[in-house]
Length: 550
Image (tube, one colour):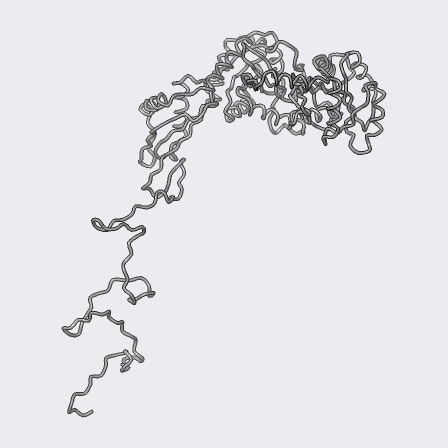
């Protein structure tokens, strides 16, 4: 069993930095300004061989009214009650402040084991603050630096001093079992997103039945993506409350940029996303952009219309919202739309059944035979268009994975299949296999033609590979095959190196005898109209016959 460790203290002493250090991940948002953390956050951590359940809390403020700081203080006190040990963090560079003394009195009245840590103790600047921490009455303070990882060994020894049998219990459980315990079923990860002040945190509190998250009339209360583990109908669920998403042009401060990045990360790792919208101004531009982002990430989407108790003509308003969703978001046609009021609880009971039905459709797998039967009927009902006078022929279809359902279609000339026909196939898939609101992926591929000049695969032309070379010519019946193009044979010494061989014209002979050797080309004469005897420039002189004089 993990040790519950609540990290408490006044604002801006490094609680979230220490939380990330013990968790081994950057889960909590960290900034230089005080009061960044508002909701308490729970995560698993480990220090040596000790398993920890870490609780990050908001900075303690000495207020007791209806303000936001007072509600943050109530969340911190709840974390103290739930924890086994409280880790009281102070700033060693500033020393002990009056707010630290007030908070120390509250911890003493809670009757919980307390370990005091003097953070930011690197260097000599924090030595005086470490000495002042003795006056709080919680024993010897631990000098540590959460940013640089210093003092974790001393913290480990302090935890073992308070709970000495912690590791022994863990070892005993392992020896009794003798084998690894099977992990429980993974929870369904659900992210709740929307614009600021749409009612996301109120919806989470209504679902789990307790005031787990901070709520109020102020916009932008939630900053971190807060996961909340919950059980519904025997199934484990992890709800993730996120910060409101505003238009990108309005996000200027660094803290809001971090919150936006945390929300987008929660969408990426979720399985189902509930888009919460105010009934007064639902499906505005920002809502449409969030829905499109969810569809591009391949997550299941559920539309949640909050504050439904403020709508007068509910039937007409609901019909109008359904028509707007079908018209503005055709890529997620058939998405469930639930109208509810988280404040009064009306309609909340219809949300989770719609979520689980969508999760089942999102994880569906279709048999290959059923897919190809559907493909034949879909092509017969609406054949693909002919591009450049040639018909595109779909041949075979199979599902490669689920979550979201992803299919591969093999067709001829895949690169020329228009996007309109792809959308027709997706809509027909949703209608035929009852997958409303599920994002569907279809990849078009074409086979390899070994006789083509290019290798067309995945709709792209590539150079030919050695596997599919050019056709080999054959000379006559039974003649040997040649690997390259035909070349004429050249006799030795015949015009070698003098350019390409050209066919000759008819050869003239001076007598009946025909020379079997190659004819020699004529050579140019030495002068114009004169022949040079013996040098091949012109005709040779006839020899004198016997008895003739020169």
